[in-house]
Amino acid sequence: MGGGLFVPADVDANVVEQRLVEAAAVAGPTAALTGWAALRLHGATYFDGSAEAGRRRPVPVIDPTRQLRSSGDRPASRAELPDHHVVRRVGLTVTVPERALVDELRSLPSVEERVVAVDMSYAGEVTSPHRLEAWLRSETLRSGRRLVEAALSHADEHVRSPPESRLRQRWTSAGLSRPLCNRAVFDLDGRRLGAPDLLDVEAGLAVEHDGEVHRSRRQHRTDTRRREGFERVALPTLTVVAGDLDEEDLDARFREHRERALALPGPRRWTLTPPTSYTQGVSLLSLDERIEQRELTGSLECADSGPDGRRP
Image (tube, rainbow, N blue to C red; front, side):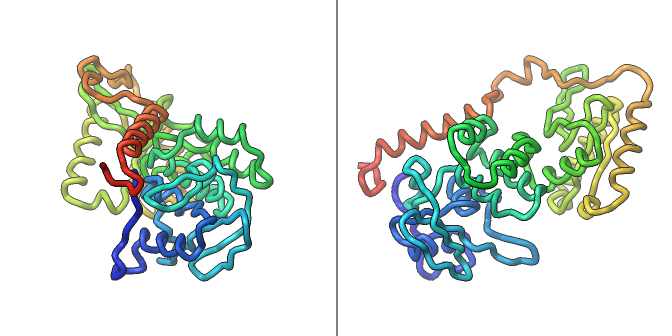
């Protein structure tokens, strides 16, 4: 973890890390990167500074000692920055993940995008629901507490991508009960059939988002086999393709497929309980435990490093 983030001078300025290095250099020694930039440096790679229509988001910088001058690529502000809100990552000063995420949420224009940001922070394993709630309890936010808490209440630590997050939000906004996300399903013989993006356990309905990543031959074959496995155990699947999330009739499709699933006769031939053979050798660490393990590894690496970040 020691050392700096060294980027060659001839690297394209559009490279995210190059933008962050340059923004930090201009901001000065008392400033810190926050928001999406800090989350990126903590390891949540979804946060790449991109916006709609190929636009780039400015690199958010804060300084507790002076008013920074904003530029086209760097919105700067003077704000309180206690010592425990700041850490070093790859040689740059950044806010801790929880402060970075709160600053990010306060900068986003909609509930949907704020929930996506929380989901992707969990997916990047930089923070967790427990850590965020504990941080909020210990801190005094001058603005945006309700906004942040609303996003946390709708987020899910098991989401793996922004389309999944938006699909789940569209499902619940239709007035349907909160589904499970990426939960493994098994047949009664213990064979793993797959983990649908969403699973309505009560109705017995899997919901999948089919985006660009699913266009490859290998992924299409995997998707087809998974759906065939679900069909074999009477677990119907509703597939939502890219673009459907903006369609007005999607709520009606949700309800129609759900009612069909509820009407299926006979006992269920699938279960969420894995066989003992499946759990053997599989990491069952919680999100909090995985983060703690990574932090411990990072601390040990830093302890073994010299002042310049190199191993002695």
